[in-house]
Every structure is written in C-alpha cells, then in structure tokens.
Image (tube, rainbow, N blue to C red; front, side, top):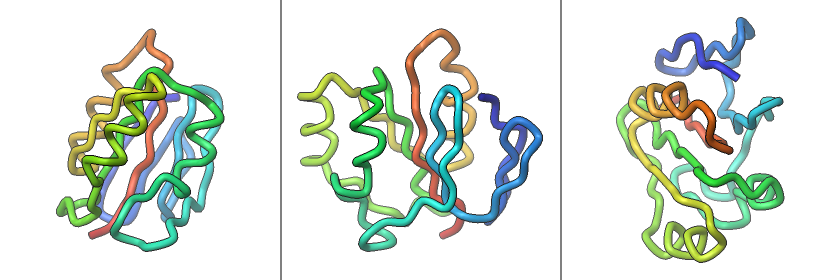
Length: 112
C-alpha cells in the first residue's frame, strides 16, 4: 500500500479516496475505523491490528494531533512485539510510506 496524499479529513491510498479514519495493512484498507472514544486510543480499538501482528504500528493522531495514545497502550503493544510510532497524521503518512520492507500497519485519524 502507498498513501498518495493526506489533507484534513481526506486520504488517498493507492488511488482510492477515503474520508473516514482508516486502518492500513500491507494488502488492504479498513474504513471506516471507529474508536470507542474518538480521541482516546484504546486496545479494543486495535483488535484487528493485534490479529495481524505487524512489526510496526504507525498511529496518526490527527491533523492537529488531538487523539491521545496512552503510554500504557504503547507499552502493552510493545510487549506483544509491536513497535508503536505515534505522530500527527501528516508525519505518520510520511513514516508509513518510508517503511518499505517492514510488516507495517497504520491507524490513521484524519481530522482534529
């Protein structure tokens, strides 16, 4: 997968446009991606990611970075062998595109 572009509320992945939050895996996109509490990422929000067991999970915290990613969640995923990188979504997109050759997934909040 390649993220072609990202702007507030819209992302283009392999030529297809999405206007809801997304989970991006090496061979598929899940959209819409909903969280129990919109701006607080929790383990249950990442059940599909955990099933996939990527080496790296890149979290896009939103355009302004308002989505919270608790340190406890990062630590728990780390104990499962999943390295978490959490950045504002525009930076997360760049990191995702640069992670070629890795088993990488992304959880991207497109607004806020």
